[in-house]
Image (cartoon, rainbow, N blue to C red):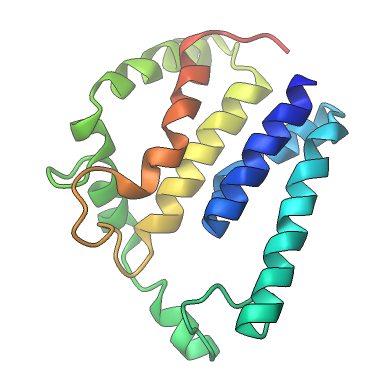
Amino acid sequence: EKILLAGLAGALGILTKQAFAVPLLPLAIWMLVSRKVRFFIPVVASILCWAAFSWICLGSVTNTGYNATTPAHAAAFWSHSLWRGLHLQLSSCRTGLFVYSPILVLCLIPFALRLWQRKVTPLEWAAMAAIFLQASLYAIWFDPLGGEALGPRYLVVVIPLFALLIVHVKP
């Protein structure tokens, strides 16, 4: 039942913002490898709903509403430097995740210790991959700052994943 609820949470995330599928991907792979297929029932349903909405309202299942009608136009959305964008996402004074939530740095310490001891679980790897993918996605986005927002606007969805790095959860 908890696996189905986790899938429902992921599905709601996707329906809220399609980019939520990116940090969900490593967790979905972990669920698949762990043979927890009930997770995918609501996730697949939400992807199908999103695709139907995009097709009906925007004319294509691949249209996200940003009017990227040609490959050249779509490439302009992914034009920022990865390293500069990661700095803006993680450590800048205006939007840095670790500046606005310094306690999250402490979450990395137990993970680093388990990494040193080679005791990191697949779920912890999935959480780190999700955090990295989300930060990287918006690092190369044309506006990694998130407009006029203060704080880590684009990384708010992965903040709960830091909790998985604090406690050693055995599969």
